[in-house]
Image (cartoon, rainbow over all chains, first blue to last red; front, top):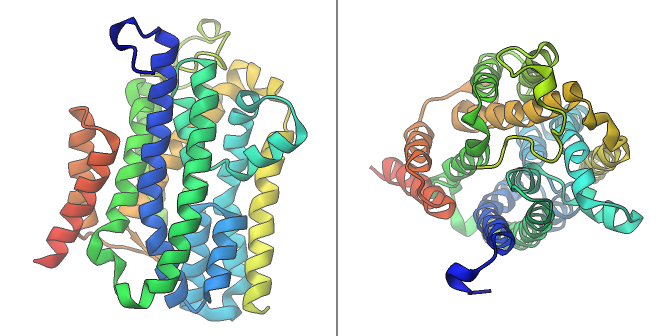
Length: 249
Length: 100
């Protein structure tokens, strides 16, 4: 591993991907404590909080679900389910991008789909070589899965004792982590413009639509800009997009 | 619906959506149009999530300690501070402001 300056470029790529994955896993795990605590304070028991982190395993959907249940109780069930699913559709979109990275094999692909979330997709797609992308995907997915589930359990168990998790700045930490994930993608004007427009749309719609929907409507910005290729490079310049998608630093 | 029914239904829905993403033929993304849209979708969703997590509180827009914390994070990422340190710094800024 530690070969210093004689280290081949491929190994450097690989260790960078692994380090990024572990760092993201650590940061997300810290946030899992707040999910566990919030879930319990929303009326879920420890088993229910843990079930969500094990099976749903998608932070945005999980927070949306318990947020709506906390406000509306079981009567808000349909809205809570719809919000969680709508917020989870982006994982399906990530899956389209990470599917070629994972490669063939039914069980491997099922496991990969299970851990396909914002973090694993972002770390994987930010790497510059196929090997580093694969390593980044699995390390991040597994690190976040293990960390998120352990800290959900811990958070649920000690939630009452911990009190208000926002006092520890965990909500801000989660937003900052997403800033770090999007950062390498913003070098192109087109991506930067889409990011700003999507953020504005999501913010403007937050008071109007039910939780979960503003983020999905904001995604339409990408569909429109991407389909028309506004602010983009000419079509013939991008024949090999899946192997060099421009997200690498 | 009972609480358990809500939790199981929502969890299975989210899991099926993940599986569906892996059933779409990857060749769809070999065309420049769909590939570009998929790329930009990730950017748009992450940006929208940042906005909602920084400013949203249920269905209200709230400007609080999260805003300076995220701005600090942006500056630190711009000067290439490592990921974990930035995330910790953002948490400390928010916690510090709230402790005042």
